[in-house]
Length: 138
Image 1 (cartoon, rainbow, N blue to C red):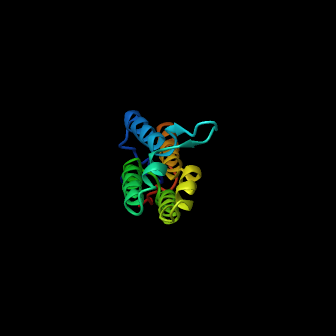
Image 2 (cartoon, rainbow, N blue to C red):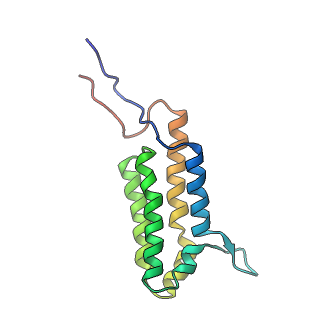
Image 3 (cartoon, rainbow, N blue to C red):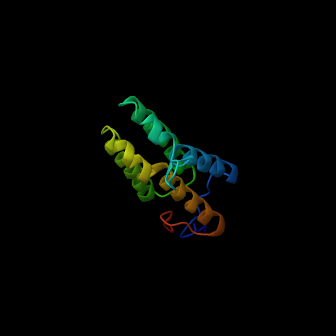
């Protein structure tokens, strides 16, 4: 009689190189530049956001690209929902002229989302059981 294990490990299909690429993309979008005379970091997301609607839509597409890696990394659904919330807030506030651009400088949704993916990826490399991935015994 074959018994299935109570809990299984969901393997990430991402490697460290993919995680590094996501980190570089989030850095470019959220904190690639320092505002002169300050320690405030901003990225392309804030700059392209100055173009009404189109800039925020481009930022949304790039955030969606980062999000697409979460499922491949085996990130649980509730963490992916948190990521979608980060993206939605970034987009919703971002469409407000000028205020949204200032908000983008502080919110950094891409960085937050890559950190969620990265933390899960690290945990999956060091743990036998990943939260939220259980199978029942038959």
